[in-house]
Length: 413
Image 1: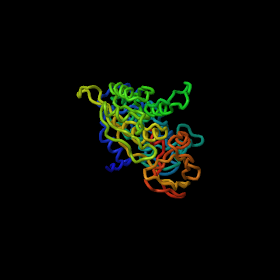
Image 2 (image 1 turned 90 degrees about the vertical axis):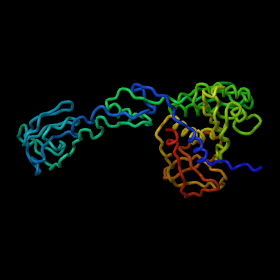
Image 3 (image 1 turned 45 degrees about the vertical axis):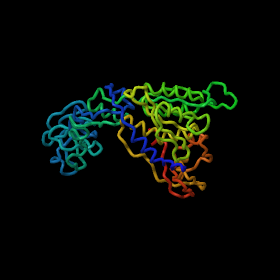
């Protein structure tokens, strides 16, 4: 019987995202504690921002009717620093004004101080040497935010700049989605933690630190369930433990087809497996499904994504598949993945029948250099590089060709 063709990267991603639903629970959090959270509802500004017309420059508030010609001389009738309010500006006068101060009624322009001078021998006068236009250097009331209008929309990932917007709108608390809870464990009798002695044939578990750091960078509550022995019973037990209090289970290793690879039968026994292997390199043995939280159907399921054990495969598949899945669970506003057309300054002539993701680095000539060893076990290629080239199946690359470049910055934020 002929095996069905493996899913493409896009087909696999579409399949995962079609199942992901944002977590429903929300909580009200003090605004300063919301960095890295996802806004659960639209929030409206409590005030106009700015609250009054104000100046964006140090200078003089004037009436344009009084300054029709260069060199107009006006009486300085008042001084308005930021945080105070002046009186109505009378005909033939100017107000000395400082950045952020409210523009007095009657003034319709601000002339910056560099375009003014104090006439020699005079006191209390200013000479306006540039003819201003109406509205010059004036920030209008509510031009940033209007009271009662939406300041931030539901699904917004809260960065420092969003917290600044919330503060300017007068908000003290924000209603945010609860954090997505992810459990991770790692299979392989050969694995050891840094600091432990290595037995013959053993290796240190790099995937643990890589994947847990990725989860934390996305704002997840990540639970490390450690290294699980290469046994079916141990793998099933770990899945049952992980499913109870988590939205998503991530594993690394054991997802291939060897005799010591127990992920597939364990997930099938404890839940269901919807996807198995995709046509990409590195990262072919990617698994997706769900694990029952209990024997009671009403208790629901925890989603499951099994990543390959090779460190580059694990890292790349996390970025391409797990990250967007988690973003949707978080309820974040969707945005297309940032990619750029760049020039390849390398040859890649041994094209694979699978969609390849090559580790590359921007060079000083505006092109991309290729890490010389593209093995899925060489994690230094990801540390050295600053992004991936998305190479379609059966497509060699020659130096000078234009390629699709995906920076790691776009995949890690």
